[in-house]
Image 1 (cartoon, rainbow, N blue to C red):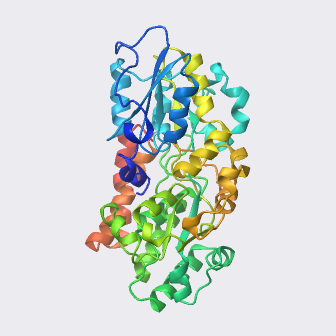
Image 2: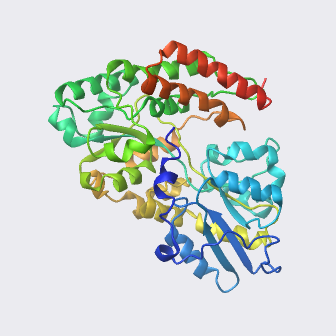
Image 3: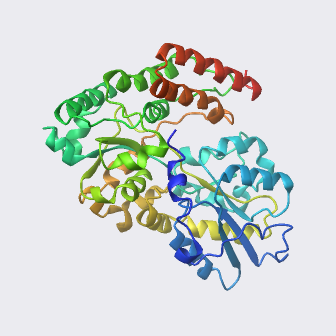
Length: 425
């Protein structure tokens, strides 16, 4: 599963030397901070926000509030969960990863309702589907959208040209409009340029194929549906490049070494652009971007939230509203490929200019329409845990030669067991 790759690559990217931030792991309620709310702490992880914007927020609000921003390494969710449960040293402001937000909703009481602080008045500035993912059934808003992960197809125009394939983004999108079209193109690429592969691994295909639908693994009535046709279809799609011999079978530990060599394409979210650029700087100008085969999906995208221990909710809300304003969101895309959840940002100069790494292409022309067309699907609190066995079994096919049908049966069986332990019917 590729959602964690950006965190893996950028865990140490946000440092005090680079951004001028004070790195601390405390300072919240019960940690000895000031009681009048004139000192606020914020937890997030490297790459979650623009460090330049956060540094400016410290200066912007410095007259009233001392903002201490902490880049938390390691398992962010686990550290946040443990701290919330303990009830001490809780940050005043915290990030929550998009893939984790559903698991926090059952414990929404640990966070303040942002609607009470003014979010409802500005919520129209942010994509409705993204906002609702951080909302309880009774309308409590625990998360302020930071970004989203509209997907696209990243491809090596130089390798496509060498293979006699189209290189213009619109033409490639037309040639790879469906998954079958895309796989056929990959077969042509490998035949023309031996040693070149279309995808990094089957998990990347499965993840997007599931996200292109309107149903996932658990329905709104808390029933397990991970054995139904829509998941089996995504599984079958993921298996195809393996059977065609165009799957590079790369895991996260070997991806960095492979990305600049024998991968002709990459499937991923907007933030994945920075991963490619950092891992393969020598390929600058050779990459292009076009629409995802089969339609857009969303991968990742996070939130800021205010734990109930927040010492000055009104001031904290002002800070996160400023950091995540459409104008500052556009800057976040320029700084670190953090794709905004605010559509107004898409027309701003910071997002509409040409990208040198992608050959001067204006990549917002691909990601902007994708962001607005992402299908809405219900994501249950246990969804991520239930999904995990499918990735494990796809890896077992690639690494151990396990038969796809046997892997499917085992994935479903394990997912059902996890679902039952999580209280899913």
